[in-house]
Picture 1 (tube, rainbow, N blue to C red):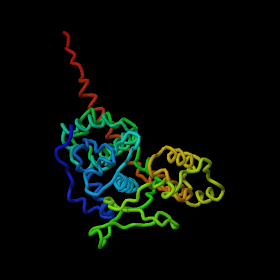
Picture 2 (cartoon, rainbow, N blue to C red):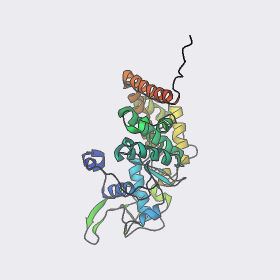
Picture 3 (cartoon, helix red, strand yellow):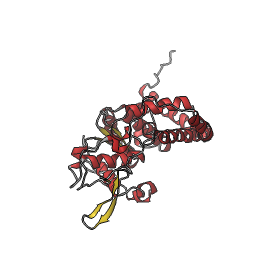
Length: 316
């Protein structure tokens, strides 16, 4: 069932992360949040051409550029294979998890999501909300609790190392009114590449070479890279991280598969792994235990509700 309204809290302007988005990125975010086809889990069909038709002057290329920039900043997750895009924090801010009936609509919407990666990220975000707000109405629903048992992954698992080929942005231009910045694709290129959501001057025939190149088939961490990792990411399994790095970038589609410096992208990937390792090591064990106890108690309560104890009549 499609929504007939969208919930965008004015507190969004207290977020430094949102204020750091440029005009094109903010427009794309609000377009997705208010899209008439967004379901109750925060997923919209990812068809850049159709989305572009909702804004005068936009093209599929500029829609994709704005969305990929949002993805690099963890606001959304795109699955090109299943043609779906997730607004990561939708469940946190929409308020539907406080309402029992809408919580069931959320479960039904979750079941309709085709993307495995999006389902894992939704489960991860839902579990975070359960940790923070265990008294919300949704977490008293057996169907919602069943989702928490599924595999969950942080969005970083699918976006780490992602660098957008350019940052969409707007600057006033005498010829365009509220126009667009342009930048050369490479230091030797003479053609301009449009950097905004609306693009009256989109350069046609853009080739992957303008955005970098695919990961080399024989990419590996050489001795100098291993030394760098030992100094900067000592808590990371370099061999395993490199294998995941290669597998990820060989499987993605769109601009995410192109980089201008694969060694720098690899270093960014390992730094993200190192930060997560530090976060895990410094987490409070009593908080983790409390979360697990809450989960077990909630599941036990649901089980007891479904299986009430039988009354045994006394015999004389």
